[in-house]
Image (tube, rainbow, N blue to C red; front, side):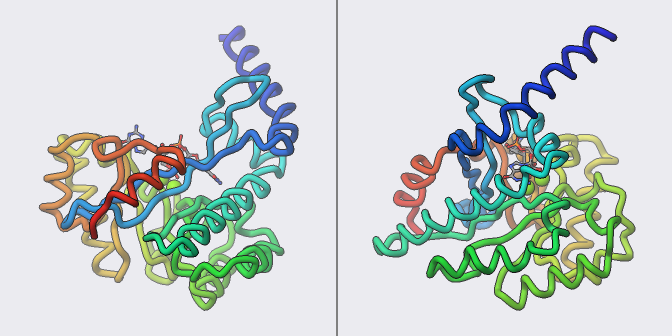
Length: 266
Ligand code: C2E
Ligand code: MG
Ligand code: MG
């Protein structure tokens, strides 16, 4: 146990020490995972996911570096870099007369609550001529715990600007359900731990309940982590309109996403 925790500490120190250099050295990329419409089985959007291939540490998983980037205040740089990269990509496609679809980007709670957050998002947007509806923001469920009134105000201002938001990893946080209908989210992303265990009756019931809840409060349920055709069939039967997962596509480079969009018919 002790040896493990020392190894882990060393790894965390390495990541901490390399983060700033990695950001300056442009070692971060955005991968895109297609969001699939369950009626048409077409790509209706993407989720942008951060990837880091460090020159010193090799490939580091976001599960390991996102928490450290959050603690060290660097997450803001990563989130905003992703936004700029995606806006540039969408704009290049628009200018070339090519098809574009909305891209969802993850925003860390610390970043979301930062006083400059909205102004910075708007300033970056204004450097491009991409319509705001092509970017959506995902925030994890636990945010309401911090400050419900503040979250509501920020989400409303984002909506006024034309940016919709999703509540991410729904069902695993600690938020009180009574907050949910009052927060102006357009989507509920059902955590993949539920979707993955849908063959268990209890988990099936949870997914069913989240889908119904979403419909009842005018939010769109989106399934995460769909890995099998059985899961897809169950989700379709329950009226889930869209989702993402390895059954369809893993997160891919922008170049591959580009090819996928160019091929798609609708
Ligand atoms: P998330 O936002 O819930 O993203 C979904 C995660 O599920 C991604 O992991 C994705 O690769 C993975 N995934 C998708 N489909 C499947 C599937 O069928 N099976 C399994 N087992 N996994 C699947 P990833 O890319 O490792 O990201 C982990 C988390 O790190 C994200 O969870 C998100 O919370 C955070 N993250 C990633 N990129 C960013 C970023 O740019 N900014 C911020 N603030 N957080 C990020
Ligand atoms: Mg997400
Ligand atoms: Mg998620």
